[in-house]
Every structure is written in structure tokens, then in C-alpha cells.
Amino acid sequence: MHVHKLILATAAIMAISPSISNANPENVALNACARAFASSIAAPGSASPSYKVSYRGGESQSALARYYNHGYTFYLQAHSPNSDRTIARATCSADVNGTIVSLQSEPATTSDPALAARF
Image 1 (cartoon, one colour):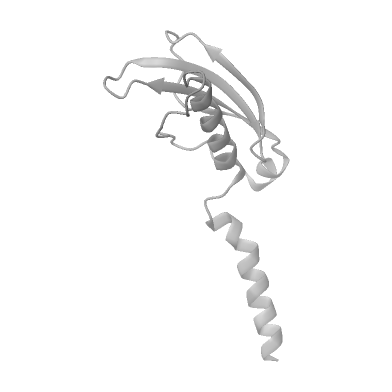
Image 2 (cartoon, rainbow, N blue to C red):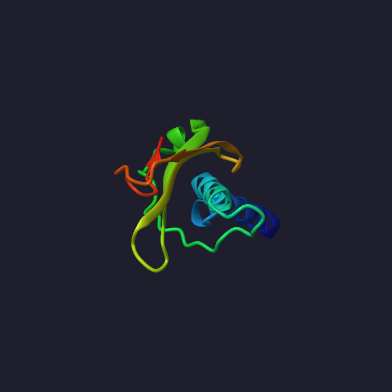
């Protein structure tokens, strides 16, 4: 009798743990895009610069929409650490596994929203 309760409790914990944890596909895609963007603006032959991601999260989606979502697109901006001047911009698309689909540089003078997700 106790084994059945233990199995049921374990199954319930396993079912809700992905929704509680921070490792959702959007974060995986965002982290992959941020790493690729930082590498793309580094000087040739040098290490990627350190960076900080400021992201407010995507729009809330239904469970069905999240299930069928196959990728994310992010608008990225890099600011100078000494001033708030934008030094680089890019649009990055990644799939739910964090594989970069495309990374396209944009002029630093456009006024696209910083790190906004498009679904």
C-alpha cells in the first residue's frame, strides 16, 4: 500500500518539476543566442567578452502553444560598460534545444526593442 503512494508521489513530482525549474526551452534558446552574440562581437582571436543578460521574459503561452513551439527569435543589444551607448545589435533565432538557426547583425542605430522575444 505504501509503495503505491510512493510511486504516485514520485510521478507527481516528476510531472511538475519542469514547470518549477528555470530550465525551460525559452531560457535555453536565450542563453545560446546570448553566447553566440557575445562571441560575434569579440575581437578576432580573443575570448568572448563578459556579458549580463537583461530579459523580462516572453509573453505567457498556453501549454498547447508551448508544446508546438519549435523556436524563438530574440532582438539583442550590446551596450558599452562605461556608457549606456549601444555598440552592437543582432537578431538571433534558436530552436528549443538551443541550436542557433540564424544570427544576423543589424545597424546599432535602429530602435528595435532590447531582448524581446517573438513567437
